Image (cartoon, rainbow, N blue to C red):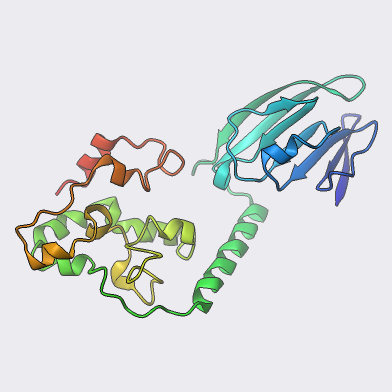
Length: 253
């Protein structure tokens, strides 16, 4: 539960046990609890939480530097400590390193992620396949009357949304499926690629909504694609460069 490392004559005690602090050493606690709980723990020099909260900068609380891993591991936190002769923290510098495609993967971390993805996929495979619903029609149904729109849609990134999940090994991750398929988690929506292939990718009904009245009366217009609709998936976390007019132009048809 604890690991003792010596670097440059500094003894670093790393632990996941809040009671395992050691006198005369630099103490680092790895905590799987919220920042609010970390503030209640006394005596540690540094606490790093994995709660999923986003802290732009570490906070200082009663002599403890508290920071958090970036949500979904999209950035690597680099924390540089200034240590006094008594091995106490005098100050710190902090920065985020974006983990883009230009950063080489760490094999050990990749193995952990692959194991997680495999376990999540197993949960879906073990779940009972819901009965086919009549809620979502899919792009092929829309194309019966709007074939030119289907052709223009095929040229957009929306049409390859599911393929991007497969490339990342996330084709069975519920957190990702909800924004890369049609109606995931809803009656008659996407379930798995094997069971509901026709509802893979971001299709008409994800943006224009479910409107059975339009099928009964074609003169009834579909819902316009507003910025609010896009922001359900194009959040600051998932799509930090999102610009509604620019992105809308990319999918116009």
